[in-house]
Image (tube, one colour):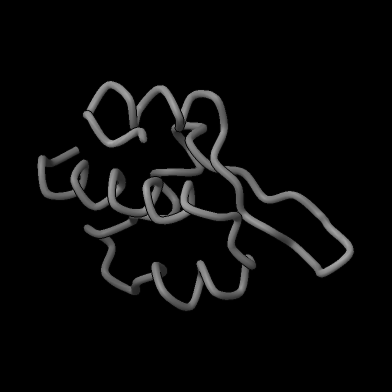
Length: 77
């Protein structure tokens, strides 16, 4: 994984950490057709974010691992 990709994964996790996001919004905002920029997939594969069903529909939330990732990079508030 490249430093640029790592930085984008960090941005995605930080964005979701501010508030749980609707799955559709996350996919619309972060999915890409570029095979070298798999930001959403990388965040899920690393266990930083997960999809959870709610009354409003699927929400994406940050996991404990994702919170640790943010803290380790000075992004947790």
